[in-house]
Structure formats: C-alpha cells, structure tokens
Length: 325
Image 1 (cartoon, one colour):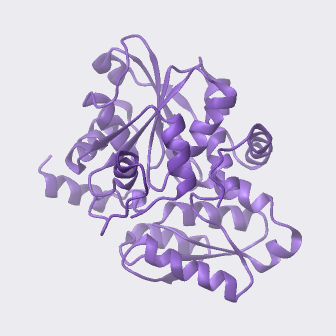
Image 2 (image 1 turned 180 degrees about the vertical axis):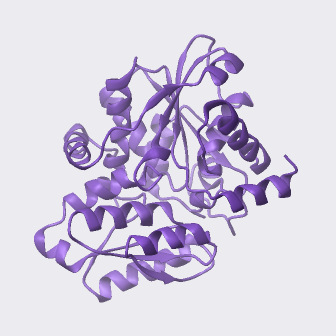
Image 3 (image 1 turned 90 degrees about the horizontal axis):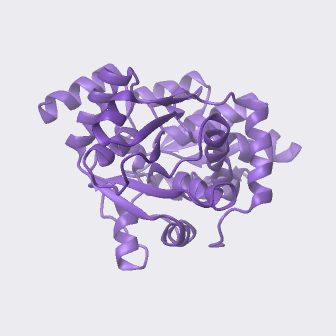
C-alpha cells in the first residue's frame, strides 16, 4: 500500500463529488471555549451531517468513483458504526447497496440507524480489526468493492474536503484539531492543509485505550493494541496503517491523549454552552484543548472538528453514572 499523502487532483475531485451531494456543515464560534482558552475557537459541526458524522464525506467520494458494474454489485466495509453509516448512505444515494461488518461491541443505536438505511449487517468479531478481516474476505468472494474506512485514497480525500469548507466559511485557522481513530480523518485534513493552507498546523487527539497512533509515532513503527478499552468506540482501530503513520509523522504537529472521563465532561460542557451534542470520539478534541494538552497561543484561530454526534440519551446517561459527572 502506498504511503504517499493525497494530492491536489484527488482533493479537487473529492470536493466536486462532495459538493454535488452534501451541504456544507456549519462553522460556528464557541464563545465559551474562546473565553476559557484565550484563543478564537470555532467548531466545524460535522456532527450535523446526514449520518451525524464526517464519514459520509469519504463514503460519497469513494462511491462516486465506482463504475456502473461496481455500483450494481455494491460495496463492502467494516465499521464501528460511523463509517458504515456514511458508506451506506452514500451507496443508497447513488443507487447502490452496502454490506457492513460490525464488531460485537457496536452500540445498539448505530445498528438501528444502519438498519433504517437498509444496510446488510453482519456482526463479526470482538473488535473492528476482526470484523475488517471478515469484510475483506467477503468482498473478494463476492467480487464486490471493499471500501476501507481510513486506508483508502478516495475516503481520505473526501475527509480532506473539510479543510476547503473551513477556508470558504471563515479565516484561515492557525490550528485545526481533529481526533484519530485509524487516521483517515486527520490524514485527509493534514494532506489538504499542505495544498490549501500550508501555514496551518494540525493536531490530533486520541483517548486512552484507543491510542494506537500516538504509541506508533513514539515507537516509529506501527503498534497494535491488545484491545480497545475506551468508550470512544468509533476510534476503535487497534492498529493503523503505514500510510497514515507516515502522513501523521510528517504533517501532524502533535498528538494529545485524554481520558474517557474528560471526554464525557466535554460532552456535557459543549451541550450546556454551545447546545451541540457530541460523541466521545469528537468531544475528546475539546477535552484536549481545555485541558491544555495541545499547544496554541492566545488570540490564535483554532478550529475543532466536531466529527460526530452518534450518541443517544441512554448512552450519555450511562456515561454520567459511570464517571460520576
């Protein structure tokens, strides 16, 4: 697999595809976070996408580039929920169909959301990595396109379209903060800033127990976690890929790691002050910012990618009870 980042041609094509099917998500100023941090903090509300996650961008771009036969046969993927939702939505929009392999740990509300989109759902394995092995084998057996949730050029380029929208909606940011699961989102964003905003820094955030990338960067090689223990289940890759590691080592200025309790506290503070509901995989970015785990200077413009809001009330209440917040 190539380790190169995404080029300008791929990004332009992705921007065209995404604009054809998706409306831009809002970019709003957080008065609360700006006051607390001393920076000018903007939230890019990817949690308001049709599937409540940025993942639909990569799904749209990947499905748009299938030929007629590929669309007819349908697509296959493995997901902790959000990529499956995005790809299924994209496939349905473009007249195709999706088979989604899910690990046993997938939240019930995400499974129900996939059912509503008419996805074919197969539960397989204890982790995303286990589900992914089965998905790849299934795609080969059935001669269908397999769309990797992060190690795929079309998917990464689709996620990178977030940067183009940010630049159209506001001033060039000094810093973009985005969470890291497998690394597709931040690889796409970091690649896009190289072409569109070369002076902008990119910082990543993981949660303890889903921090394979920060460990890999420190080790200078891919590190595989024995299991995902974080509540941020959509950051649930035990191991990333060489391409993502190479891009992140070259283009991402820092990676912060926060605990689950901080992520839950950030969900509540964002809901209270900004009236935006985030899942832990998104709120961890805010926890890192307010917890001063990311370097920035007073007055700088910081964009936080609010990458997902796929959480239901029952899950949020269970988190509050578990962490006593």
